[in-house]
Length: 127
Image (tube, rainbow, N blue to C red; front, side, top):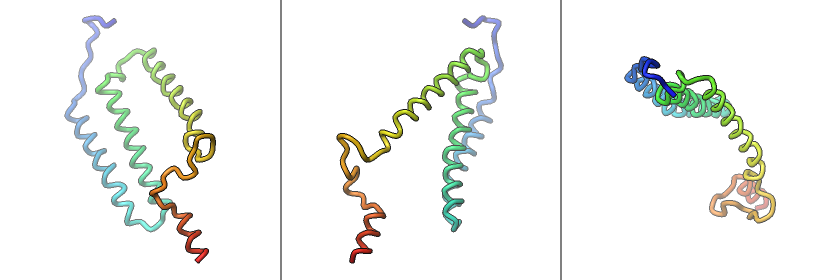
């Protein structure tokens, strides 16, 4: 599909590598620094932001520069968006069943070794 005349300049991969290393450091040190905060909502928000936010930025960088999606035609971008939309639709369709503990062929306790905090509170209340 490509012509010999369709050349493009490659990005500076060293700069991209350094940016990815900085984002790796942020994703590692963000949750560690958030442990010193007393407010649980801020801690959870910081951990989720560093995990998913930095992950999304890194995935976008890799897709754009290493997979060369930044120079692809619009059809490929639209196809990628449609595939991601179908993936999210699939997850939304199966998540309620998969994440539920009730239903046919389900055990009442999905992990019998793990002691759930609710059971410990119930046991303490009945003593």
